[in-house]
Image 1 (cartoon, rainbow, N blue to C red):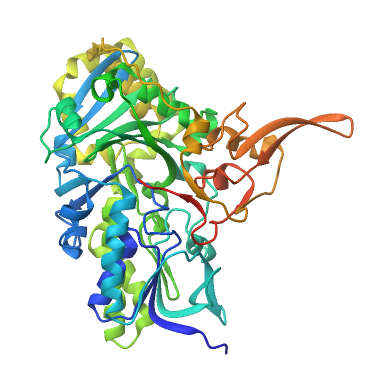
Image 2: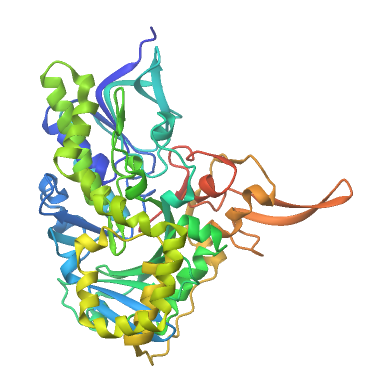
Length: 552
């Protein structure tokens, strides 16, 4: 048997889930090595982003890192709204009841500064138990002996054995796929998020949003401004910037052949946003990522041998209508995985940690939040084609419109019901049809003039930081039929744009013309979209290579 370096625990990824796992392991005296792919923790991570602390959760990020809110977040989110839009007509609902339910606090964050701060604390704590944090390490897969997972392999280091491997390596987890626990086969199991960070003076934010320096707002947008694609937009106030973005069901984005950056621009240029963006829009970063739909992919048994999955790697991203929570669930899962290992080790059988972890997720109610019974019973029924057509037809009919006018304030109450929100089907009805009709029947026209001119796609790509390594994506089928969807769905590609990852072209071959797709990985933002909508072989770039986000 080959001798390998051995640690009690190896944590892959130092986002919130990995950080929570690492410090909880260290607190239990476990020798823990943390391996991070980026040049710095957070340089590969993107979030909308809001981080929550739920009152019912056994672990919160500020409980594990006491100075977290003072040192690593942007602003507390004190107000929440959703804007139903039809053309220039808008009807706004206050979502405070929904977002304050079971919430101790919620703050806006930028992942690069937040994760970097967490990583410093993680390194200090894990050093105390004989481990530490290493950056620029791309963990490529699982180390196996006699068919059993016993550690990890990487591009930069020799194989490492461990009594437990915590895969906190994000939505594109190579470890989860290597173990056969997650796959990229179904577009309807994923969302794609695209975000712009716009620089803004703190005093200007306070004035335009009418808030104090210890207050913040979260705004959501739905209706007809996104060309019928299922999903919506968001705007969050940071300390000295705004996070503005869109999140769409990937299957809808693919079916509509919609281009993500253009849908983002539809939000940025809507007259409703003129009051907040003003005439001095300065976009400092463009980014994108995939988001797992926990209702469909949160793994009920996220472990195999010595491997446990936490956070996005396990599909633990709660996306139910206007509720989008991921980082808090990753924190809880990471800490529970560490707790499970400590329990198993104390009983003399550390390799049972995975089973203990699975039980803790159930007992603490995490799985019920991620995969709510209400959706399985009612939401899926609403996704049946005939039911979907019927409900959309009713909502748009004279009877439906009369009902919406008569409902009045009851609609706002419905939007604030956690039970009703958990039942929302993944159809056009809640994302497009109903918000549009609400705005048409109850909304008021917006008369502001929006003068924002979003950057062109090539400028957005050019402003990002890259350290280009070897190509990390192989296009297996170049035909447009197999891989053409990537031309529009990739957030750094577009039709008739020659500077993105994916480009389509007509090529003369043996006397006839073929519609083909070509690939250039240099401008890749590593979201993973093409792994699902195109025929590719996808992996992360080498440690420290590829895109480096400054905001995240």
